[in-house]
Image (cartoon, one colour):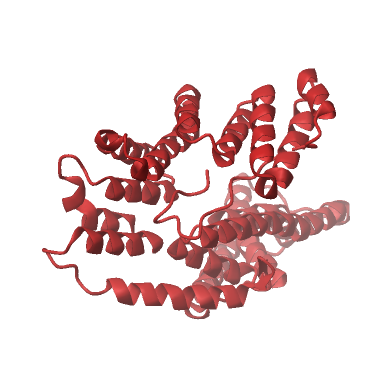
Length: 390
């Protein structure tokens, strides 16, 4: 399911497999070791294939238990060790070890290493993917969320996501995704209106089918000027795919297409979304000067708590502690109900990680607002029509 998890299990089982192969070398020569190793590889492949099919069918895996995962990893590691030792020692004609007592401590250490280290790694990975799953659901990226839920079920079926059983979350995602897939299964007519194309593209983007969404919007973005909402939607879709160069291009095109309407207050949300999208994409591309300019432009357009907190996060990430504190403090003052706690966490992070910045510490001590770190802004209910949390 996750190649890195499989690699971790195999590498951690390799010392123990090496010990088993060394212990068996007294009885296994080249002509026996090679067939035995191939038979073990075949067994492992059959188990892995059966596991994958069962996970695809029921979203649960034969390897969901730690003993099964340990056993499969040990089979593969031992087979590899037997094969290598059979070839190497047959060529060198080295004798088999006469006394195995001296290597028993190594066997015990290898057993502990193979049993415990992969569990810690898997727990860390599952925690990371639970956070990703929660974010994907909040951002309404249901296609991506369903894939993550199935992967989690295959290796950690008892997980909890937002205090809910993973099985329940996965079933709800399956139901919702199937419903949207049925809605987009009907072909889009050539003479469809702009609203119909936009709605179709939103649904495709929710499913993670970004290329199909782009095809549905092609007639709208080929015009002069390009349809700004279509450009924003494509920018958000490619942002969810983490294709930062492409999403930046779409956000810039959306901004340019809105220039003639800059005097209209009704276009402010769309223009603000385009600029914030540009800032976020540049930030991910490590173009810090361009990202800062875009964030400051967004602040000039709408000096709200949201934008101030975005700037606080940006400056904290860029190790500019004083500016980060200033914008976090303003966000806390403008919207204490939303940013009091995140602001305190961010400022706490600043005073902890940037302990050399005495001015932040002293200003923080004098400030009545308290302390401040930050996660990203809370995600919107449907980021296919509104910007993702940045």
